[in-house]
Length: 495
Image (tube, rainbow, N blue to C red; front, side, top):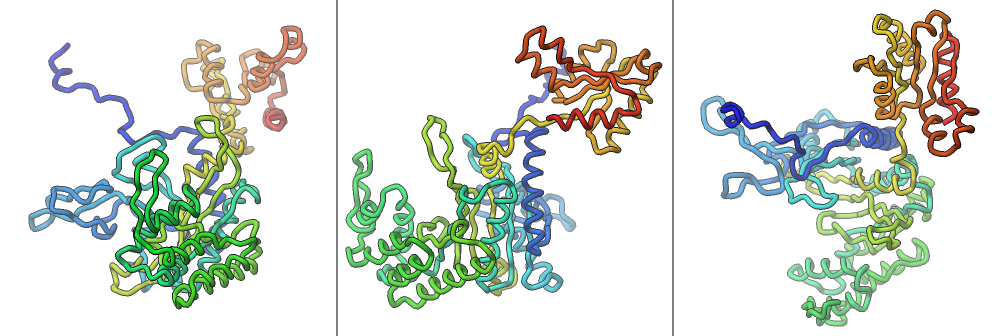
């Protein structure tokens, strides 16, 4: 091996660990989905916001530990050679779209309308250990209202979320927006006389309700239980009387919103904060009804407890209710594709004043996976019409054909490789998923015609019919040159 190659080895052509590349159809599917969601957000009066992919670590809310790099979880670096000498600020790739919103809301608070409605879509980065389906770069799609304490803002977000799901193709009956309130749970903890020292432990056991049921949670809240492996799980240590309001809360889902709200009022007892939370849920239910969002689309559901440690008021989650087959062939519901709620402190770190806010984040990759599972995305992506090259001296004429097709709104390109082997041109067209190949040699040019090869029909005939049927259904037709656009439009309409 030459010496210079040893000193300068070629770089490996591989994607960094935890990252992936997205090609044509995937990028197109995602863009189409996000465009439909953006249309819904725009209709609701929300404005788009694009922030820098890089923020200061301080603005992101990450703080430097006593080591040589910032807190794990972000991709960060320290700027060098700042004016006057010394080291500069720590910078980091954004890890979500909410932290940049906090900075924007504080930085432009005198210029932005109050409340400020915005939506944002784009990649975020997490410096975490990658795993199956878990990448270090992924897309988020958020909508937030900053500066309104009214639960009307929460109701609007929930209605908008339901509209967005339907806009991308999720039918009514295949999704449900579930709504709860952190204040209700605070009231339940107050009614149960659970102190701050045990509140987090109680929250963790509540979160297991779907897995272990009412009896299992009762054991976990009190004396403990054995798991499926026989291992002993220590209980929180509540008395049966303390556990009773918590279990009443978990089992308060009624036949409709009115019944659920009545059960929740009983669960919070005399707690003022709990009653306030139930009142807010009642207002949201009434507002949703006014917005035309029925209980077949959004409901009050006390089982939504994830993330309650972060949120300060209403919380909501969009769940897809249709069944899919898991990797073992078992039926299961698709599950959650979006979540959000009301939170304080968004801008407080910058201004010292609490600013109420509410918002939702859609899991872009999960929603795309759901659309593929329903056959609403991931189908064969149609490529451009390919104008083949039979005579290098007539390139201008071939480009004129492609330009004419594009002017008519038909995606088209001219083959730019070596035209010597016509078979390679057709192989290229197949690889591009081209529906039609345009062919014009010298003879066709003299007669003022073009040959149109229907590649979709050709592939279909080749795989499905006999030789005799193939001959009776030719996939290649000749049309006058001045009818090129009309003929191709008609062919494309067949598929």
